Image 1: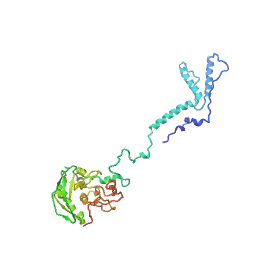
Image 2: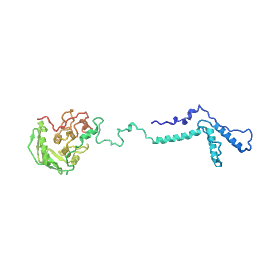
Image 3: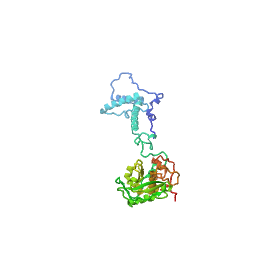
Length: 363
């Protein structure tokens, strides 16, 4: 809303009238002869004549009569009030409209100052929503790129889905599940143990976990399908190249880190340990749409792939099966992975289909 300024008010533009109207000032009337004693009727007539003369002399713009009823007798108690009115009449006669304009200007100025103090400052583009605030952290934990699908969708893909129970906190120690077996596959041999953190509880127990690990690695669609890798399960951790370990949620976070705050599993080379997050083992990932068995096969193959020396890769083409080394736990969209700030993946719009195997086309 546009408010009128002082220049718009008719009483606030005296400068614009200097070359126009001229002020008429009253002059004292000199009697032709000395005044003598007057009767009451003469004094009343003189007062009436003086009242008419005063009104005629002060008839300027905005100058109103100071006595609306000059013929009325104010009475003996109004002498002081009469003197005040006469002083005001003389000031009005001398200064004309200025007597009224100055108080009006003062009132308008005070109102303008109060209105300005109450009115909020207009919002500037720099302070508009969407600009970073001064209180925001200098380096956000999860960077949000300028392009891409928006962080909300990436976050939804990386969240742990609802589902069955899992162990949040274990003892921080692991026990080997017995079950040494023969070699399978051709190529470079890697020995492995199957271990479960003490305190972790699950349907099927530790042996059920070991059975899934063995069946996954001893599948031609797994790493052995390339002809370059062979595996053999052992019971002695000291003899193992890879220690495949089911681990509680919070212990996994401690061992693997939680810089990107979404549950995942990891390979810890200095410990020779594949850490499988029990929360993910029980519930899978959003991209797998409730197929828990497929996710369990994926996470074993993915983390063993790290143990074999493979690094993360992005989706190569929309609609194709995701590479086994893609971080499918957090999604099968490059845009989603990029939004989480992981491994410098480019947000290029490519979206793959979930896949559990290194060589899915092998019969």
